[in-house]
Length: 237
Ligand code: GRF
Image 1 (cartoon, helix red, strand yellow):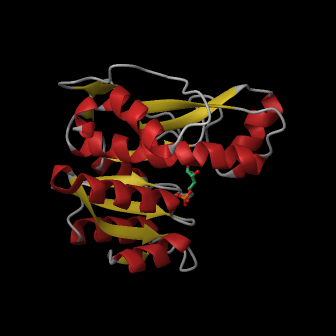
Image 2 (tube, rainbow, N blue to C red):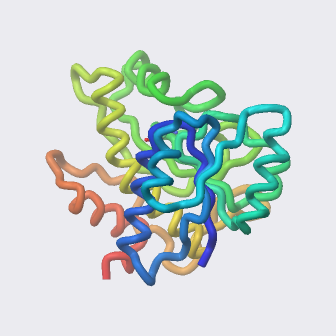
């Protein structure tokens, strides 16, 4: 069982989705959330971690931050680092130490609409300003360059006429909650890893399909089935 640390700066809905997914997998879950780290005491993710009974710490964004974070990760014997709305730089030595074991979710289809400073509403605003008709969700390994690590999984989300930052963010977030936990499980289970060239390599049952547009309206459980079919058909059994 891999031990996950979730790093979160905000409300923590992806943390919640991951915990629910691992709970639903039960004995098939390849990982457990052992620690939540927030960069501020006011983060919703911190309260959520307490409510879920997960150990949680605040790591202040300071010069000591890197050492403090590194210390926490070894104290809690962490195998896998999961960024879920973490808006801070991840210290380079942590990135190096967790190479291939550090993942992030981005609310757009990388490499478009990514990079330093592209987070939260800014991403959706940029998508709308560009007139893009398609956005989506990307789960990826993290390396030293913002939003450029190897892509693990992506899922498309259509931009609707009249969308605002908020309406688009909500449509994308729903897909984050379905895709990201499955990508984390795949990494924890060793089904996908980072090779020496920095590419994501699947072993065994590789994803059968890439991007799939699912006609709206679609219930969460139906959408989850499509994502399972694409990423891990065995997850359904
Ligand atoms: C998500 O949209 C995620 O893609 C982005 O930050 C947001 C975090 O939301 N990196 P939450 O804190 O998980 O609710």
